[in-house]
Structure formats: C-alpha cells, structure tokens
Image (cartoon, rainbow, N blue to C red):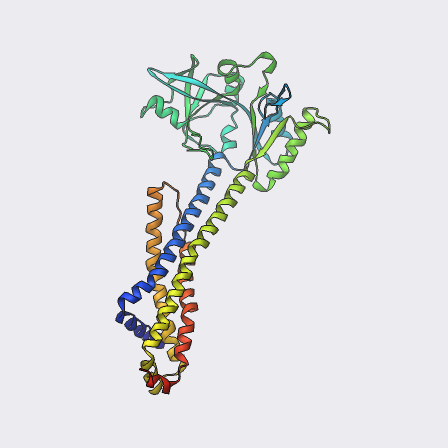
Length: 410
C-alpha cells in the first residue's frame, strides 16, 4: 500500500509540471530509443552474416589449386591445375570426419531455350554437391552416379536461370542448349540468394562433371582428371581445424611434395573468415550501443537536475510532512519513486521510438535490422537504473532536511 500511495503522489507531482516532466523524460526517451535502434542495426548485420554462412553451407572447406610462375611472377592460386578428381575421392574415403568431398569445375556459357537466352555460370560437379552445400531441390531430381559415369546430358537449374528462360512456366523435362549442346532439365534448385561477396548463387546451371569436361567446358586429354576446386563437407564445426590439417598432409603426400617445398594448393576454412566477420559485427554492435548509451547518461543528469529543483520548490511541503509524522524513509521513497517513474515512462516511450526508428532505418537505408528482446530489456533496465542512480541524491537531500529550517523556507 505504501508503494502504491507513493506512486500516486509521484504522478500527481509530475502532473503539476507537465511540460517540465516531459522535457526531463526526453533525454531518457532519446537514449533508450537510440540504444535499441543502434543495437538493432548491429544485430541485423550479425544475423545477415549467419544467413550468409547458412547459404554457403555449414562446416565447409575449400581446396584451391596451386600457383604458376611466369617470368618470376607468381600468378596466384588457381592459375595452374594441381587438383584431380582422385584427390577428392581420397579425401572422402581416407579422412575421418569428412561427410563428402567433391571436385568441380566452373565456367560461363550462353544458354538457349526457344527464343530466350541467358549467360550464366556452368557448374560441373558430382552427385554429393547438394549435400556439401546444404542445398535442397525445389522440384525434380539431382543427377546420380550413373549420370556422372555416363556423361549424361542432364541439367539442374538455379532459380534465376529458370526465371530468365521459362518465366512462370514449368522447366522440368524441357530441352535447353548449352554451347549448342542439348540438355534435359531434370531438377530445379531451391532459392539460395546472394553469397557474402554479393554473387547471385541462384544464377547457375549444374551438370555432371564428366559432361562438363567433355561437352561444355572442355579439357585436354592430358588434363582429363583435373578439377578447378574441391569442396569438403565436415561432420561438425569442432572437426574443421583437424580435418583441414589432415587434408593438407594427405594432399602433400599424394602430390609427392618434399618438406622444403611449398604447397601446390590452398585449403581455406570458410568458418574462420565468417567468424572474423561475426566478431567485427559484434564489436560494431557494442560500439553503437556504447555511443547511444551516452544519451541515457545525459538523460539521467537531466533527471537529477529537475529533482533537485523539485526538492528546492517543495521544501516547505517536506517540512510540513515531517511535522505531521512522515519519516525520512517516507520522504526518500517519495522522491525516489518520482525519479524512477520519470525514467520508466521515458523508457516505455523510448522503446516505441527505438522500434519505429529501426523500422525507418531498414526502409530508408535498406539495412538489415533485428530487434531482440534482450536489447529491449537491457535498454529498459538501464532506464530504471538511471532513475534510481540519479534520483537517489535529490531524494536523500530531501529526506534529511531539517524540519524546522524547511518550515521556515520561503
């Protein structure tokens, strides 16, 4: 009952000076709104990175071929063919923790269907490709080991290619031409969206690796077994580092490299790259939240200032209450509740401002934003804490006034 009565007295006191109370709350409103909006921007960036990780494929290692040197100039990874299909099979069968490994080759070609045509990426790969990339089929089927062995002319389309060639029509069973070679469409991939580097992953046609080499991309007889990249699916994230080292050791052995020789390949752990991006995003979120928190501090100082003014204005009232029996803790509680009430009302309005601000940022700046219950709770809790922290000194000052001096105050 004491708390309820104190809240009523506090609200009545705040209503007496509505404009002053509103201006005092403005600092808390802006502070809470800024914290929620800024943290939502950082959380949205982190969520976007997680989506990109999921779109690439989880627990993924990439093996790239080695470098070529011409006239003393190193041409970079992928400039020479050092990986083979047999390397991929050896990785899949000899290294524990590997779920699947697949060699593939990639090129660009013009695809024709009727009077429609489209230039897109051609991915020649093995039947394990969808498992490695965590990619589903929307309709149809993927090619099999028999298709790979027989260099069958079948194709699976990404959503962008399907929309460009067939629009809203059915693509399954249709004949498309890739470099004038007819292919039967047997499947349609589920939509993946953009990768972390902005590439449209749905703008692709996937065909058997053997067919790609013989019919589309072309390889010489001497390079018949070479592949452009090997993709490896690992059983769990905890095994990525161990499997990466085992892949390096196995390939060095298979390529007969001496201890003093550099690797003629490069094994990349995509999880490490994404982890660095995620850490940067978390740092940005904390930084934005810290900057926005300065507004909360300013709002708290405003509450202290106004409460000190209120104590001065109501000195005679405080003296009268003490004279009729009010204890110091009653006065302390009353003014402390007034400060907390100001902060909490400002916190509620700040939450609404933060949610609205996040929505506006997402619409105007086209940024991903994510409002989490944790960020709202922290911002609202901070407002309550600021009300207590900055309201305590004025309340303490009021509680320990000399009643006689307070009654004499003019």
